[in-house]
Length: 128
Image (cartoon, rainbow, N blue to C red; front, side):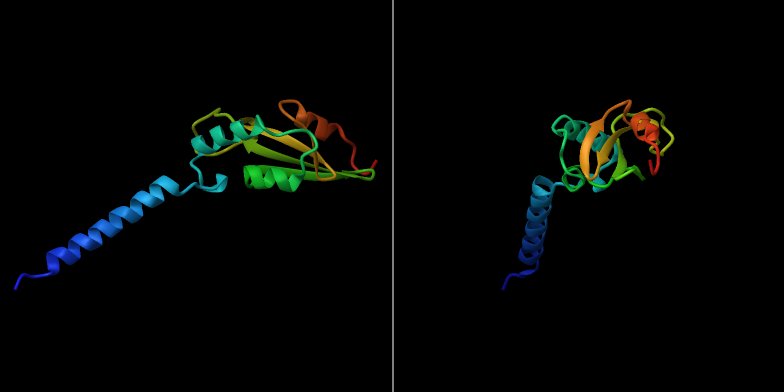
């Protein structure tokens, strides 16, 4: 009678190989799970598809957690700025604001993004 051990080991190996292949081919990491270079490319691609007026929740669902954020109230309006990494400036292992693109929201609606957006946020007076 032949031993079944090689058949069992071969079957386990084949099942494991099939599982790994499915994970590698099907699994899509969320933006928060991506390596910084992949996330940077992903964020740039997402920024090309966003539009003025999109909701804060839609942007967060699309782009994931922001690298930085700030918020304040000006008069009757709530302003929030989210920073998403979009370019590489220095190889120091840290993401800094100068490596991010700011997205500005007014009352949870996207009103601006790009290089001068943070200046617009800073120029808005608190409580006025």
